[in-house]
Each structure stands twice: as structure tokens, then as C-alpha cells.
Length: 389
Image (cartoon, rainbow, N blue to C red; front, side, top):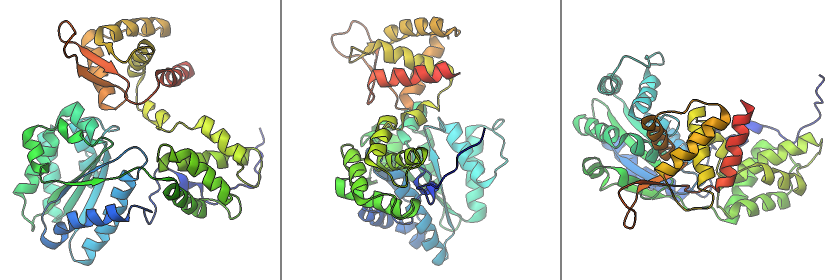
């Protein structure tokens, strides 16, 4: 077929991608300055430092951490201190082993994914830091996924390396990121003691004016002049300000630009923004569901269907619904133990919440709830994905 390639409203669409980290984090200057005060001892004295960053989706936590570490690395080098950092998304790298493998491969890209225990990987990481006399900041993003899946052993191990290292040999520091202010409660006492005097940085939701500024900056970087009027920037900021979510605002701008291109329009119109709103889900749902294999999708679909008119369902109800879903899609049903494991992984990924039943329920059972998504939206997305296979 022949493609119609007319002019585009985009000058550099990559500036709207989730991976792009701006040179300056607008309206996050106070958080950046606080991080500097917490991590400055790394450069001044070779000491390790830890911080906990929390706030809702789209409040700039991850991008601020990356921007800070990029700038701080330059600052350290100017002061004659070797410093590096590595961000790891704990939802995408689920469990201690996967997180450690990512960190070790930062230094050795060909490190094998099998054949080494967790303690051997830890020792390999420590040797790399000593050999390079390196101050290393590990950014553990969505850390509650790691804590739910594997507990706090890895964080405690990093803290032990930091305690045992000397400034001359290199050291390890941590930046933990979560949407939940209480994420550290998943830690046991030993690990929590390393964070008890910890440094907490809150990232509040953006307000309308702040979102408008963020969007105007991205329009300047990504779009051709004159293609996005101020009132369109205001309209997108208005839609996203209900959630205070900059990521959602930028996704809306990106999608509206794509719809404008599809219509061969020279400008992004209000109608294109409304079209974008109907297609872009604020929680980044598709991205999170893409991390799931088919068996986990079937378990999640069963839960989404069963819970539709309830606040909670029991593990038994979920498993009964799962049996029906497997029959519907012609998939082999996994055994009870494997089903439990899938539920645990979905909990770690933040797609469901589980808790033990309290008073009023005969016997102890696990109760399942949906933390943030309407069950219908979740089920519809899963069904679409499963049909496309």
C-alpha cells in the first residue's frame, strides 16, 4: 500500500515519550534541593545515603530521581569522586534475583542470567564497586513490588555492604520510590532500622497551573511552533488536573497530536484532545498489563469479573472464577499452588490487593480487592488482549 505522509504537527515526538527526562524538572526544585542535601555526604565524605520518594502516579518521582542522579554524577566528578547510578523498575524486574541481575549487568553486560546465586551476584556487585572505587546509587522504582514479592532481604544486604565499605573502596546508596507513603511498612525491623532515620521526599499532585507549565515546555520541545494554541494546553491541563498527573497530560498531548496528523490537520484541535481522552487511560493500564503472561492475565480476568459487584472476594471465589475463564479460553488450568503464586505476583505488581480476613469471617482466608481500577475497564482490556492472541 502507499502511505500518505503529509506534514506533521510534531517537531520531535520523542520528547513526549515516557523515557525522555527533561533537562529541568519544573515545579520540583524543592524536591531536587532536598535530595541534594541528603546525598551530598556521598561526595563530601564517601558516606552512603538513603532516601524514600513517594507520591501518586505522574508526580515526577522517577524522572526527578534520574535527573537528580545525572546532575549529581556530574557534580561528583567535578569534585573528583567517581559516582554512578542505576534505575531498576521492580515491577518489570520482579524479585531479588531479577533486580540484582540488572544491577550486575550494568557493569558486565554479558553476565549470565543462570548459574549464580543471589549471594554470588551480591559479591560480584560489591567487587565491581571496589575495583572502580565507585559511589553507586541504586534507584529501586516501585519498590513495594520488590518488598511484597521478596521481602526486604536485598535492601538489608545493600545496607550491610554500605556499612562494611570504606570511602576509599566505594560504596552503595539507595533511592526507594513508591506511590504509597506506607511502602516501607513491608520491611522487617532489621531493614527498617537502616531507613528509620531515613530521608523522605514527598511528591504531591501537580495543580492546574503546574501542569500547564509542564505541557507548555513539552509543546516547545516536541511540537512545531503554532500547532498547539495556549487554550489547547489549558484544556489538556484541565483534564489532567483532576488527577494531578503530568504523565497523563503528556500522553494526552502525544495522542492528540497523532490524531491531528491522522486528520491532516495543521493544528491540534479541541476535538483531537477529546478523542485522545477517550483513548488514553490515566493509569498506564496497557503498559502494566503488557508485563503479564497469559496465565496471569486469565487469573486477573477471573478476579475482575467476580469482583464486579463486591468490595472483596475470597481466594476460593477467585479460583472458582478462574476455572470458568480457563474453560472459556481453552487454556490449561494451573494447580492451586501455582494459582496462589500468580495471585501473589499480581499483588506485587499493584494490580490487586490482598489481605487476610479479620473478624466476622469463619477461619482465616485471603481477601482480594482491586486497588484503583474499575473492574469493567480492567476486564475489557484483558479480554481485548486475550482475543488478539
